[in-house]
Image 1 (cartoon, rainbow, N blue to C red):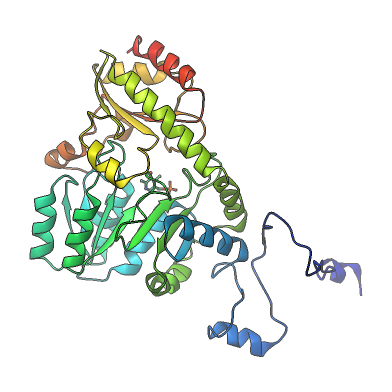
Image 2 (image 1 turned 60 degrees about the vertical axis):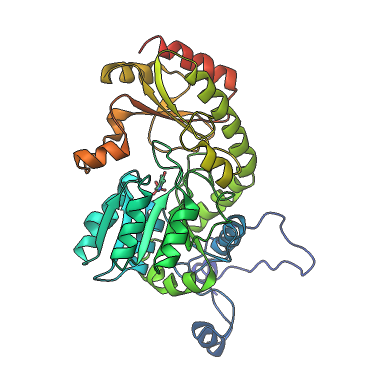
Length: 388
Ligand SMILES: *Cc1c(COP(=O)(O)O)cnc(C)c1O
């Protein structure tokens, strides 16, 4: 054999039966093989376990799917290359022409785009409400056959808490599926509710370090199996190396989230005591309209704090720019703190009434709280408030 041939057929490393890595390796391989055609065929007929092609499945991805499904309290999971792919492909896989979807003005903007622009091109109709409008939710479900309700809790960015029991009960009564973008609350929250599909951006708390993107769809097995072929064919697969990094990040997920929540609570209390701040939105504050619901629904109150500054647009900009420990940036859930001023979150796609529900304006400032020392973060916020 010439060396060029050998280089492409390298010697295999086989681990002895009683010897295994403690950390699951990265299966950085697109292809998998069986010894004979019969077994390949049995695999493709679904008669045996195994792997054939990484867009379909890969052992590193399978490992992460198992971890995330268990954490969210369901039995099955599909991974995607980003969080938006998880929510958008879910909607595309579950909806068809003529279906009706309910969504909310307070949601993540790309989800609104997916329903109102993209799915609309394929004949899917929608109704957009405020997440606070319980009567409206019950009325629309009673009057219009609805395929799915897609919602968040707490919402991005103003942290309204959805009444999950009411929404899921109304959806169940009228045969609508519930899709919860659970990115803000995290995998350890909301598993006890009658939610059909959870979607997550893994870019945020799962990876936790702001260096990798991913998304997950978590649901009971029949629902995931029904969506699986569409996901495989739409092709927004997570890369095994990204899956490996996210799996590594997950080891400290609980510690990070807990610490970030503790910091967020202290920061929310500090900001609520300041005259430069008109309003603090944080479900952990007893004064927050979502506090009682969040207490019932969540194990903690999240790591995001959103404020309305007693300032104008320029004052909010000066505040964001004066912060030294909070970088001006999109995204959230990293170990380092971030700030997003309202000017960068303007909901341009909403009508005047919908903007009122969304409650984002130029003096809104969203803070993603990291794992730094809370006293240092508070000192930084204090000096920046003086600059507003
Ligand atoms: C970031 C985010 C997404 C999208 O995730 P990407 O990984 O950036 O695609 C979806 N929903 C919420 C609530 C988010 O915060």
